[in-house]
Length: 430
Ligand code: UGA
Image (cartoon, rainbow, N blue to C red; front, side, top):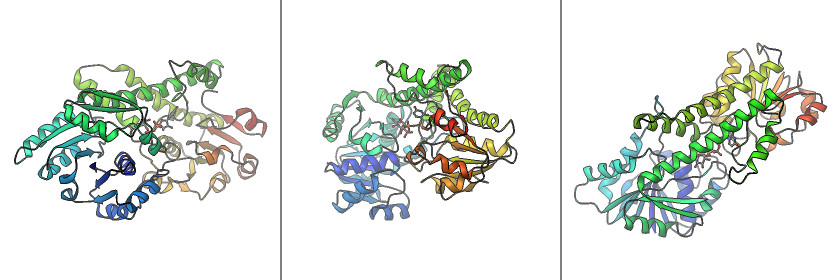
């Protein structure tokens, strides 16, 4: 099948390359000449394990094509997936202007029956709005249907998630569109949820909101455990062993970040407000997440006897999670800015996110490796659980640091072992 993706962010580029790899002819439309030229050579604009290989392979096989021009791609496509960004506005509401803009732009090139599906996370009602826009701008009767096919991939394991999803959700009010989308997804195993557009749109928000709720619940249990002397990690491990609950997304720590969970809970809160529903639970999820980030700062103060003034703090890990260079809404931004406001000097290291971090974090020193970061530091904070931090030679680190303090914002070290080495150690929930 020939299909088009508009947008080459995580969702667009990953999904496009997976469909190309399955044998389809896939067009990817972008709007920056420089990025499109690089993509044509298989150079990708984001860090995602395995993505460059799969893009290069399919560029060579002439199954994936990149263009700035709608006329190259849309006329021959049976399905067009809109995968552009929906950043939050000041009030938390998703900004849909780019979605509507590309919907308007593709209209003149529609040729034969086409399914226009949203991949971006969009509020309920957006796909219907796209339908209205297309009907409004079409010169003659265009033969099309709209659909919502939300994506559930996680950054860092995006290719695996796209190739082997837990479920494929296809929302459309047209049987013809549903059949076409089921045929396209056929080689992908997973449970198929075939439903109407509004339900599909809501599924995506509900899933992300529930994941965020699990994390904030874990962070609340962690805080309470610290106050009561319970081992919060054991509590959550045992709770997660109940199959009805499940063990994933129950890791307490420095809070959740990224381009999805923080934005999507705010957008869902905005949808709820507009719909007249007070989603108090979700407001608390957001509040607990902010407390989780602030908790790292309080713990730092505790270890440094109440003051961060003129203290040197080594921060390991800046990206919002491992295996990505994505800094969007990373907890490190909130934590580091609070530390700086309290008078600390920051030396930071991240294996891949420093370039992006440099655009956001000002007044900090970036180090070439962990060793340079911890040199003369009064405290070491772990904010992202990159594998290479898990087995740091702490005996060597000990020789380099001025004071032996660790705040482990991702619980990657064994408190007993670290304390035996002479460090003062605080994790989250333990
Ligand atoms: C999230 C969802 O997991 C995907 O299913 C969804 O497709 C995606 O958003 C999206 O909407 O596009 P992602 O943002 O890539 O994926 O990252 P997650 O793996 O969900 O992690 C989000 C944040 O939660 C990270 O900062 C991570 O450190 C934190 N987290 C995760 C915890 O603090 N504790 C946990 O137990 C799990």
